Length: 384
Image (tube, rainbow, N blue to C red):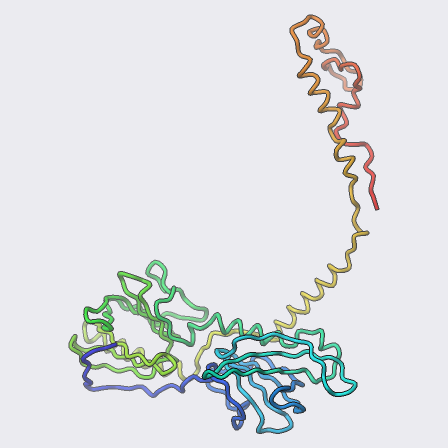
């Protein structure tokens, strides 16, 4: 992407360990469950689990990390497997019937993964023998963490032309801190170049064009293989080589004056080295809190199920139709009976009402004061 670059006084940072844990499926790796990469954390353990397809009869445990799912046998130490979240195509839970006599049906986790064009199917079965676990969401953390992984790709992967800038401001990620913003940065990926801005944070380097915010790149430090300052036909340029997992791009940027370019280069080298010691993959999950939330939801559902129809009273719909019937009829008849005759005027003269204590319009024949005063039925009946 960068043309006519010749190296002068090159400086290269030590390369970060290539991120493969979330992008590969591996089998029987020595000490797999003990050798976690920097920044990788085990977020949950699920015990008494059998790899029913690959290692039937071996009891093991599942380790749910922020990058992958690890199963290892507790019987044969050399048997294990690693499933990167980026390789998972489908996952669900099933109830399976064990072949052993006297064993009740058990809950199992099914995973379909695709790696290097090869399709893998895994079935992890609960072999604890505990009947209660069959109705419990013992694999809930796998689904929760996998969904969090899918929503946090900007922490780990290079993104081109993403919706990462709004009104000239970078959309900040959780736990992200912006250290500097540099304007007047030329992207040298094309012959004419594009003028834009840099945003430098503790997680990534972002460049976006001033004329078109959708022309941008979000580059996590995890995907930077090397940083250099080189001489180009445009003058000194910052050259960034992305890792193979980040597309293997060569990106060039020109910043004037040269002093500001050198300052930015030193800042990026420092942040790149610091990030390499403790990467942030963006996934925050607490298994204990998640279990408590599930328990509370189950308790609320159980309480809701205790309410029965017999606990509620249903109003008679026939009474609802009687509300205001006589009053509405009286008003309707009054509108129709209005004439200019003397008798009508005489009937309209007010009379004193002892019940109410004030003068009112004379009530027409066929109606009582109670009919007009009571808008609701005096007695409401209920039905079982």
